[in-house]
Amino acid sequence: MNQANPSTRVIAFDAYGTLFDVYAITAQAESYWPGQGAALAKTWRDKQIEYTRLRSMAGPTRYKSFWQITIDSLRFATQSLGLAMSSAQEQGLLDQYAVLKAFPENLAALQTLKARGLSLCILSNGSPEMLASAVSSANMDGLFDAVLSAESVKRFKVDASVYQLVCDRFGCSPAEVLMVSSNCWDVIGAHWFGFKTFWVNRSSQPLEQLDATPDYEGRSLADLLL
Picture 1 (cartoon, rainbow, N blue to C red):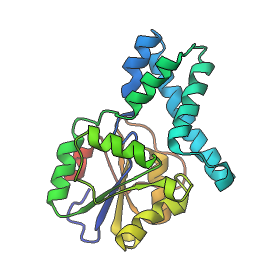
Picture 2: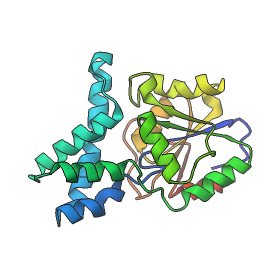
Picture 3: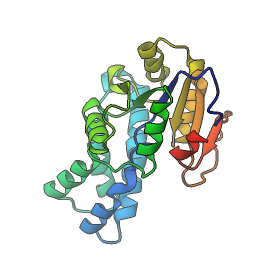
Picture 4: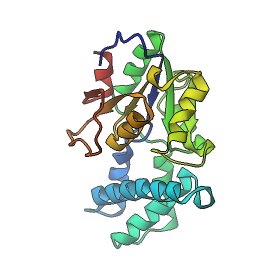
């Protein structure tokens, strides 16, 4: 990324998968169901994203909070894998999801960007309570000028109304915002809206075939500082 780009006023960060590791629950799932932890984590995440899209497309009458979708998708994931889940196991996984670990480089990278005078925010599908818990547990309090949740518009990414939250909050144009996400589909949605984009491609995934390309790409949040 060209850190000297004078048009960037705001950097918006996706939360889940970008700031916080959604697969950090794998070890706990493995302790419950040996040999199934990774499969559970992946199925849970895939179904979670699928449910946000389905409910967003269906309109506000079918809306559920991201937290409830997280619960629903966990229940589907265990059932699809044939795993019997007790109430205690469900609560244990949900408790850990509420305080997901941040990727190790993130705190220092955010502190450096904040020191450069940029406005930083989170733009996430996550429910406000989920985001507050994750930010606090990662010692990121005070780093963000705003934590923006899709819950306020009862839609999920890649609906344009979610990206519009950044422009409304900061009084800026889309061209003045850099969206940072590890989810390529989110990067593409932000690009369609008019944001500049940075794809944190941690595991060298192929580009989604959606007729758009990120402006920048790196392997971690530390690459934003280059």
